[in-house]
Image 1: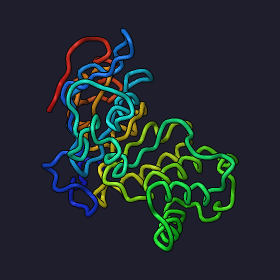
Image 2 (image 1 turned 60 degrees about the vertical axis):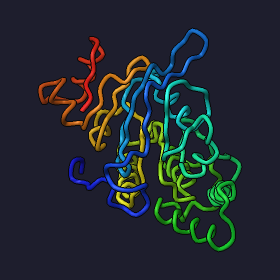
Image 3 (image 1 turned 90 degrees about the vertical axis):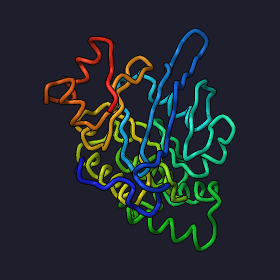
Length: 263
């Protein structure tokens, strides 16, 4: 599917493919002497599925938190045209965020979690009821609506977290390791939901360390030790760094030496 999707043609994005949903210049996050994100300059086109690839500790989650205005950063950042340092609340109203950790309420049912998050996003009444019914169906959870979230298996929990993140129909969706710990079938189903969102015009930034999933993205950013060391479509990264081989080979070569590529 990669390379055949028309970026920016849906109805829920911020415009055409030439516009940017995320743009950073020299974005840096420091914690004392430790630099978690080191001068990252990133451009994510509106309507794209953009993958951030890298090992644990590469800075992917920290970068997402900085884009949401949850942690301080230096450099320049714009998310949907807004500044995370000054307009974090406005950004979070337009962005869906699915964190790496299980962020739902385990003692609440599936439906109660959806209702709670919908109210947080300002939905109520018939609009919230319709949205809950729609997302239960879309994520394959109608039979689980009265099950407690904490009793669900990994794949079902991830579907519920995804549904909670898109209740308010965000223009931008940030997914942090969304398929971590789920089986291959559940991973495929999750990517089908990601593509459906993107095809409707939502920009998706997804972090992961699965090379096969990275191939599904329109564009990739590869992070190592807080730095963005390569950024291009997956096929271009494979061609430049692995002679047409695998992304795993390309990533190994990038990890072995300095340098990067942007196209």
